[in-house]
Image (cartoon, rainbow, N blue to C red; front, side, top):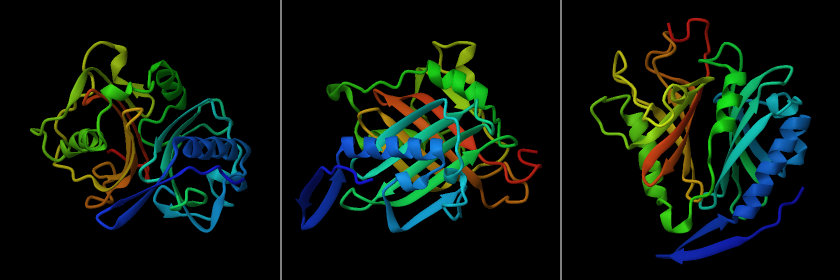
Length: 272
């Protein structure tokens, strides 16, 4: 499959930056959803050297989850036209093997070929996993496009996501949480008891946490950022490291409205 291309070139201080059109990226995510539904990664326009990873580990794309047919009940994507990249959240509650999967896809500078696919793949045994609960709550949320005059800048959106993660290392740092604000963690939803309140606030962790290896996909039109990262603390066997995790965040008027977190557990002792 070859995607239609809309290439925007701008020269600033002698540097040329390429960006993809939103339509191009929407075609990419549509192809990705079809590929995962059918277990056929060739539906994506892959580069000859496309890198593919699941839970931060390189995987042969023909042997990974993307090559397994999955019944997808709901999906939501965002489009980073500046980086020529996409993010998609898949909820597969009714699939024979239930999953919640977060995937980021990077394209080449021309917006034609997929050069990198990274997925955080969660299923039974992972942190707070409950695909049925995830499906129910994500369907209730509203992630409509934000009117152009009310959109936050990329910097503001990323700063909100970083502030949320930075507070895990210092609970006194401010976080721009809105009211309402709801957090979907695995299949658990903080907003169900009081949907008009700020229910995203978190207390201090037992020890300061440094959330490392952050990778961003940002969509100004949807006021969204997804941050792939390594979450420390859950695995006692990796006290100085972290497990694969992502935080998918909606920002409205500079304030966080929704947070979706999916995190992998690598051992049965996860979180103990």
